[in-house]
Amino acid sequence: MAALCEASDVSEFIKPLASFKSAVWKHFLLSRDKTKAAHLKRRHASEDVQIHKRAKLDPQTSKSSLKNSAGENIMNMFRRKEKLPPNSERSKAITKALAQFIVKDLQPFSIVESEGFVNLVKTLEPRYKLPNRKTLSKKIIPEMYEETKQEVIDKLSQAEAVSLTTDGWTRIIEESHTGVNIGKVLKDALEEWGLQHKQTDLVTDNAANTGIAAEVADMKHISCFAHTLNLATQKGLKLPRPAIYATLIATKEIKRKETDINTLSETDIQNLEGATEVLCEEKFPTLSIVAPMLHLIKTQMFIKDEDPPFVKEVKTALFADLNKRYTKPEVLQILHTASAVDPRFKSLPFLKDDEKASVLTDLSTSVAEYWDSNCPLTKVKQEPEPTQHQWTHPCPI
Image (tube, rainbow, N blue to C red; front, side, top):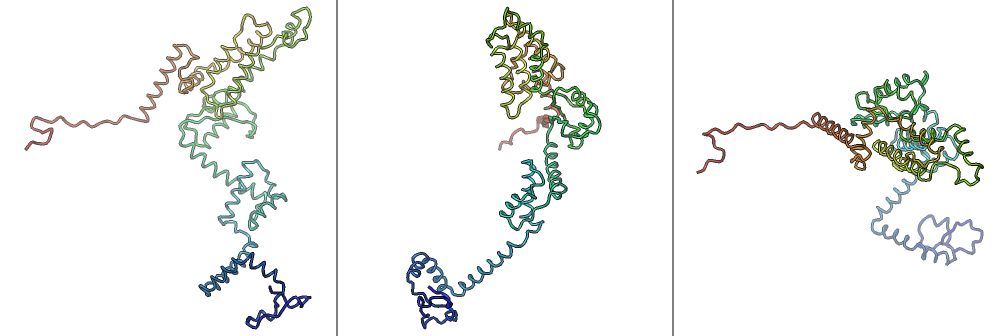
């Protein structure tokens, strides 16, 4: 174990042996403490042996390796202090990941200037220079939007039909939200996304202006079934107070027990809850479920003779609102056709026999027309019939 000559207690050290020829020993002494030497042999012997083996096998290579290793370490120290060029692959990959993080997690642009986030990025990649919020909002995010938008347009171009929905709160319309104005916005959107020549259906709530907008944009309009069911339920529960009052005073005294108050039965409530749960459980609710669900609600919640007056009024108001929805023939055709091609409802159990036959006939006609226009039959060229002097098989020898 060696130590510098300037050590305070020189008695603990001895002079280097005469065989130590290196000039470095003019500045070091040998320690008398054998425990330190034993530690080196016990804990680091394998490392020492490997170094000496490499030096003996190829002294020149060993010196070169040490020199290269030292040079690489020095260069790495300088690299850690250098900033990544903005156009480097590493820098562009981090910037893209940063933009995706902000967009997907709805983070504010100011996060790139928060102390904790800056420290996190500095720890992960000290050489990366974070963009400021202005660069993010004016350059990086808009560029990502245009790139993603083009990808979506390319995918939509391969579709034959597209279903759309609207959200008026997220679109600034300078004029009032009339059906005509919304319809103009929809037409502009169809052209912007290359959908003006495709079959497009519009699914919205039951607001009157959305139906007019669909007509202006020349789109088929379907009302959201969940919103329809919600409106019908609210209509049934928003009865005038006299009806509720009359129910409460139907007996000589108001009974205190909750079960004695006339309301929808547990089965009726479960039917409404079941319809809502079915819609919520499906990750991608399809149009094919609307007609069967309407039929199920109407048949299982029909008005019974034994229903109290108030319950009858609730059901009457609910059905009156449901019956005025989905009444247009073109809408019913879409709903029934969608159910017919769904394996769960293909037997159309909610329709009468003549209605089933009409739906299946129209569906067969549509399939045949599609096949004729997209998959024309290949005409086989007929060879002329052989004459009496032509052989139809190899001539016998």
